[in-house]
Image (cartoon, rainbow, N blue to C red; front, side):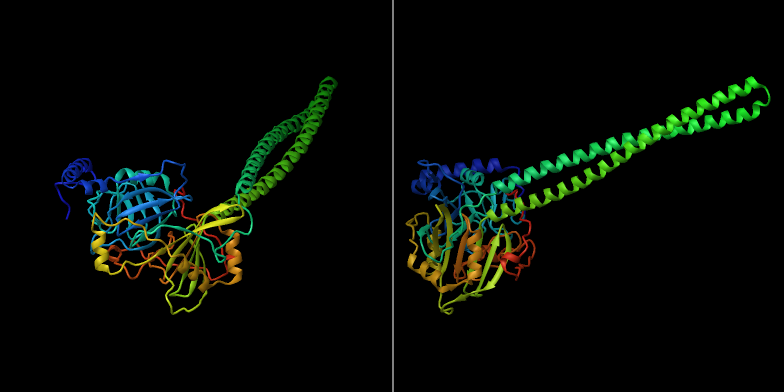
Length: 491
């Protein structure tokens, strides 16, 4: 039921002032809690790149954002309250909207919204009471939400962890390494630009040839009119000769008129012949110009598609391996492109959930990091910790040995490994998990993986906007057609 005392869309300023006053009151009575609410941090000691991932600790009610060198932004959050918990798992940003209003919760204002699921889980600015209080989204400080919104791109990985985890560098032979040097789309883009320029020039040449042919056709038309008039004049002089009769003087005049008319007709016929010859030359030029324009347009289309493919090939890929389904999936630019069976050794034994991320190229190699998700011990204790402002913010170190064991237990067909190493790029990821893909994985999404042992009230209370069937091509990746990616707006 909508409140008539407060309209979130039109009276937000008043609410913010009221909340600011409440925050001031809290600061007076609970300095530690107020300090935590204002505890935003950013790295100023180095230049930062576009974020690669954000990790949200449900236990500590904190978000930390990372680029390829380390953490760059950190702030408190307010996740889903009990019964509507923000689900722990793996997500990505699939939509961004600076001015967003909820279509589920009384038109609530959600500034700088970054959507994680089409059912409504998102990051956005909002009030922070110091504990989990949302309906499933992750609220962030308003200024922080705006700053993060301005730096992120579609596809940025968002990890919602039960506890506080950090990415750790990892080196292992099973992690994909690029076969060649860094790819570039500069050559393809330059070729596409050159082809487009040639197509424009050919089209202009065809238009110019057509205009010249039209002028030549007009000359022919004028010459034909003059010929018709000359033929009529000659016929008139011939009739005058016949009607002149016996008077010699009149007959001579008629003969002279006939001679002039015949000469004029011959001249006009010569002009018409020349005009027709020029017209044929122009018509031939039009045909050639149009063929050249058609060929140039075909070349432009081919070059443009090559440039688009090069751009798609530069998009990071995501590889997901599920122990539950014994399958490997690949997505690129939000599109499913491969689904094949894989072998997992000791398939009945848990493997964990590990997110390996290609952080950056170092020479010919790729530098990888890993984040391993571990469930909190006991949901009641976990819920209590999430609701506490004084929760311990000590990070949980990723167990590299378990992550390496997970890599060693998966057997991927060599042809798939070869193809992946041809297209792997920074920001690509490999996820190995006991879990299957969530039903939230669908059209225009990255992989969504939920931790089955953690509360998921924020998902179960929501209804998807529309049911979407997930289809993967069963052909090998290199025979699978690319589909056009969802256009962001893509950055």
